[in-house]
Image (tube, rainbow over all chains, first blue to last red):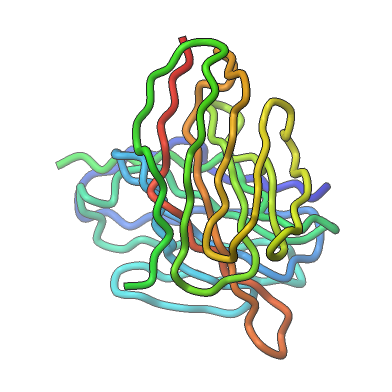
Amino acid sequence: GIQVEQSPPDLILQEGANSTLRCNFSDSVNNLQWFHQNPWGQLINLFYIPSGTKQNGRLSATTVATERYSLLYISSSQTTDSGVYFCAVVGGGADGLTFGKGTHLIIQP
Amino acid sequence: EAQVTQNPRYLITVTGKKLTVTCSQNMNHEYMSWYRQDPGLGLRQIYYSMNVEVTDKGDVPEGYKVSRKEKRNFPLILESPSPNQTSLYFCASSFQIPTSGRSVAFFGPGTRLTVL
């Protein structure tokens, strides 16, 4: 099946810093979503972005489908951005979402 | 408000005692699925359903059952829970974007299950 790798696995930053999270996938995809899992365990849908670039406030995402990667940018980080960020794709013949292992982000005040 | 709901949100039970986790969506989505999340393993799909009365196994179906009698509901059934089913469970529903064939998934709030 399709493989999804996220990097870095852990990231600790000071409030106000910018960050870039990466998602690599091993096959062509017809869906790619970024999720934020907050410290209470809830999965929040950030972006649906199988290709191209989108922005939502301080967050933006870019997927280069031909090169099989996606990037999530967080600017001017806030403590509420802490949590785990997951990339998930549909591809490689599977019907459901295949998740990466996530990037654990800690924003310190 | 468009949403996916799950109940219960937290459950502590004992080995062998049958339980059901309910999942309901109000978006008229055809595709629904269940995932479990475990440390170091990420989220893995348990079962999915393409439509009413159509269900199929995901990556980790052992020990679970599902049913899809109505479009909005997709309960997850553990007939005889075991401690290795202690996990965080998510239900999701998806819709397909017309003409593109691509789908977008929405997740419920999660159910934290502990089996003693």
